[in-house]
Image (cartoon, rainbow, N blue to C red; front, side, top):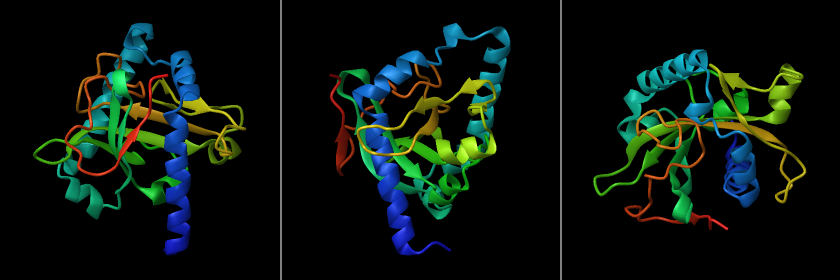
Length: 202
C-alpha cells in the first residue's frame, strides 16, 4: 500500500500532466494525431468499434460514480473545460493503474464523467502511461491500443515533466470530432459546483 505522501506526489504529477495535455502545445500534438474516424482504414474502424465496445462493457459498472470511487478512482482535476473547443469533463484517476504502466482495454487508468444537475454522467475513459515506463519495456514501440495510436507529449516541456502517452475513448457519449480525440465539443462543466480547470482556446 502506498503512503499518503506517495499518493499525493502522484496526484501532483497527474495534475501537471493534465495541465500539459490541455495546453496549446498539446493541441498541436493532437492535430498531428487527431484519430479522426475518416482517416481510418476499414480494419482500423473495425478495431475501433471493438475498443469502444470493450470499454463500454467494462465501465458500465461505473455509471454510478460511487462505484468508481469504491474501485479506487478519485476525482483529481476538477472539471476540465476548453472554452469554444469543448471540454473533457471530470477525470476520476486510478493511481495504482497509472503506476502499473500497462495497457489493458478492460482497465482504463481514468474514468470520465460529465457533470449534470442529476450528478456525474459517465461519458468515457482515458488510458495514460508514462513514456519512460512504457519505453523501458517496449523500446521503439509506442503504445497502440487496438489500432489506436496514443497521443505523445515529449520532454522537455514547460512543466518539467517526463514524456507521456494518452488516449481518450468517448465510449458513452458520441463525439462528432472522433471517438479518440482529446476534446469533446458537446461536453461542458456548467453543472459542476467545484473548481473548473479552464483552458483558453488561444
